Amino acid sequence: MGKETLSPTSAALLRAAGIKVTQPRLAVLDALRAAARPMSHAELEALLVEIDRVTLYRILDAFVRHGLASKAADARGVFRFAARDAQREHGGHVHFRCETCGGVFCLSAPPPAPPRLPRGFLLAEAEFDLRGTCAQCAKARR
Amino acid sequence: MGKETLSPTSAALLRAAGIKVTQPRLAVLDALRAAARPMSHAELEALLVEIDRVTLYRILDAFVRHGLASKAADARGVFRFAARDAQREHGGHVHFRCETCGGVFCLSAPPPAPPRLPRGFLLAEAEFDLRGTCAQCAKARR
DNA sequence: CCCTTAAATGCAACAATGTTGCATTTGCGG
DNA sequence: CCGCAAATGCAACATTGTTGCATTTAAGGG
Ligand SMILES: [Mn+2]
Ligand SMILES: [Mn+2]
Ligand SMILES: [Zn+2]
Ligand SMILES: [Zn+2]
Image 1 (cartoon, rainbow over the protein chains, first blue to last red):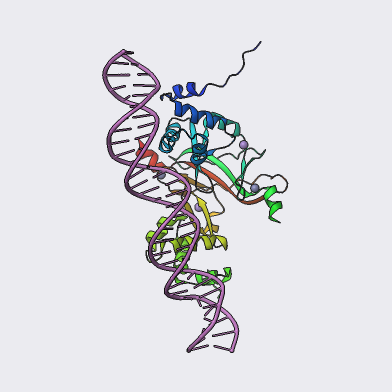
Image 2: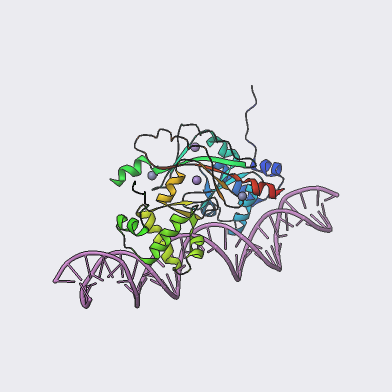
């Protein structure tokens, strides 16, 4: 009987990152890892009412600093956070964002290869960002 | 003697878009068309001190509604606006955004072709978004 | 030209998002 | 169990963007 491939506990991830394991951080990391898509601060705040607003900002920034989460502004200019390990599932394909309903759709196409950068430039992230109207919203519009 | 390829006046662009030609709009459109890069509201406000803050927001939104400008959140979550005709110069290549200094750099690589979308989906815009650290900021960091 | 009128502007108030300072609490190594 | 740096909670503030409403102005028809 082969050993199961367990995902690490959130506590283990926090310890591996070298930051203190606290109840608020466990709750936030659990929420991020369980989320189907990148979450905004407001969404997390609504989900985790017991956590202070500012603490939540600081926890998210700490996660980003220590490589546990990614942070990117969405089309509306709001930051969205994704757990790095949950995010890996979405690394192999392209996303389409509906400008009407805000929905994110996973396409089957592989992401394009990043081009060569000028000397000295460091690439952190490359995202092929497709925006438009999803089928449902397009139909409703007529 | 061939006829020169004149770019249209900003007033002509406003008229063609079917909106009133006003002094604030002319100033904003001139500024956007002269700008080397997409401009934030704050940058435009500093440049055009005579224009009211709210009016500037409304002018920019009107430009977007009428196809005279594009609007997109930058890596810091701030909206940046570009005149559509000035922007055409930047349609044929990819951009790199420095997460440290906020600078936008034009790369020589052509943009990747958008993938096939699911039935009913409408593509409005496709952008290959590269983020990281520019050479100058990378050097300063060490 | 001058009126008329809808559109655009200016200003005040508000809302959402993100940051800073500081006193208090807590995880964790010793 | 202690001591202390790290993390939290709370208040105040900053920036970015929105809404309501009174006033001004562009543009078209006499
Ligand atoms: Mn996906
Ligand atoms: Mn360019
Ligand atoms: Zn949709
Ligand atoms: Zn830079």
